[in-house]
Structure formats: structure tokens, C-alpha cells
Image (cartoon, rainbow, N blue to C red; front, side, top):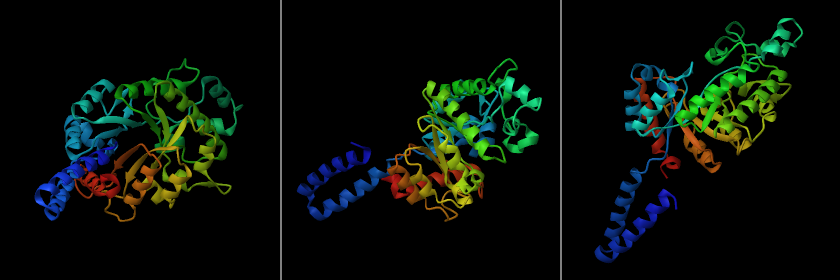
Length: 338
């Protein structure tokens, strides 16, 4: 029996008793008041994509997490992993803070673009590798903001720098208690060959994550969603090469809006492969009026999307105020409350 059914059953018994004592009319009024009060105490699980508050977390992580808990958030998705630290703290330190304020760390965003194994890298440097493998040696000059991050775990001796990096990252996030590990950044310009390479790369990350009891997600940005290659969606090309038992999706409502992609249709198309969603507006949730969150959340629940995370990147008020307003808006929606 779920929480709502439990309350309805109990409150039904209360109404029967009240009716026999005080009469039908007054019993109905009493029942309505009790239902509203009881349901107001039921808070659906709602997470926050923590990079939303990265500056505040940097200044005072404990205060930020305490205020998130007080606002009604029950989970967080971390997203600042550099040199073995998560939001500037060791995984153990950050886990302890989250536990202190009753916040589950369920997901993480980490970014590491494909690197050539050493032997292939030497061939490519000699001009013997193809254009794709040369592109795969990511540098900041090649890809700008999409460049490889957090290379602290890479060693010259490693024959597969990708495996080494991901093993360390997955280990760190397992300590946090994450169920999902997610990647969103991709090279700025991608060919079909690039997409096929990344599908293989994602499959390998998925294998490594599953070995540690986690699942790997790809979070497509608007650039991926809107790109077509020979009339075929770049996302479809990537996902066609991904093993459905190793690679899942995280859908972002604002990225869909920016790419002019119907989020509902995307959820339906990849039914069973979307584990989590970012509830992401142009600013504070609900303010733009451009995203029907009620319809999207209702659909996500029907399709068994497992986790929902609020994300805010544009602030009309102090960030924590926007984050509080966003969860209040989400918790007011019928699909979330009931």
C-alpha cells in the first residue's frame, strides 16, 4: 500500500466513526480538513542538481545543505568532481554532511571526454590513425568548454586512460551512495563516426558502473538534441549504438525546449531507458510558462522515471530563494502531491 492509499484508508475509517457521532454534514467537513492537513505533510521525493548552488556550496557547504533540507529537498545530484574531491571535499566528508541533514546523494554529473589509449595515441601522432581518433584526443584548444576535465587520475603508464579515470570516479561516487553516474559534455563538432565511438565509450563506462552497483546515464544537451546527420538525430545515432542494459538517459526539460524537441515525445520514445529527469526552466521553476511541468511529471511517473531533480541556472533572486520557490512550485503540482 502506497502512502496515499494508506492515508485514504485510515481517513476513511475516521469518517465512518465521525459520521456515526456528529452527523453526515459535519463529518464531511471534518474529513476534508483532515485530508488536506494530512496530505500537506506528504512530501514527494524531490532532488536538486547541486551545481545550481555551486558558489554557495563552495562558501559554506554545511549551511547550503541545511537550507536545502529545510526547503523540502530530500535528495541531491552532485556535479563538481575534480581530482578525487566532490564539491571541494573528500567523498567521505561530503557524504557525512549530506547524511547529517537527511539528504540522499543519488546521482552525480562527471565529465571525461574520450582519450586514446597510449599505443593508439602514438600511431595517431605519427599520422597513422584516422581523423576520428585524432579528434578523440581532446584538448581545450580543440573543444573549448567541452575539453577533458579532472585529469588527475590519468597516468602515463596506463594503457587505457579512460578506464583508469572512470574507475576512480565511480569509486568516489560509490562512497557518496550514488545510484547513477552521468555525463553530458561532448565534443563541439561530431560526425557519425564520433557518435559511434562515443556509443562504444558509453557502453564501457556503463560496464564499469554496473560492476559497482551503479548505472550510467547520458544527459544530452540541446546541441546534441538538435543536430541531424543525414536526416537522423545525433541522439538516436548515439543511443542506437548503446547497449540498453548498460546506458540510460537523463532528460532535461530546458535542453528539450532550447532544441525545439518535444520532451513528452522523447520520454515516450525512450520509454524504459530514461532513469531520471532535470526539471529545468529558464529561471525559477514555473516562471516562464513555457514548460508544462504537470504534464511532464505525470508522464514521467507513468513511465517509471526514478528520480526528479530541480535545476536552476538563471536567477532573478538570490539563488537559494529561487531554489526554494522552485521546490514549492513543484510540490504544489497535483502529480507531485498526489
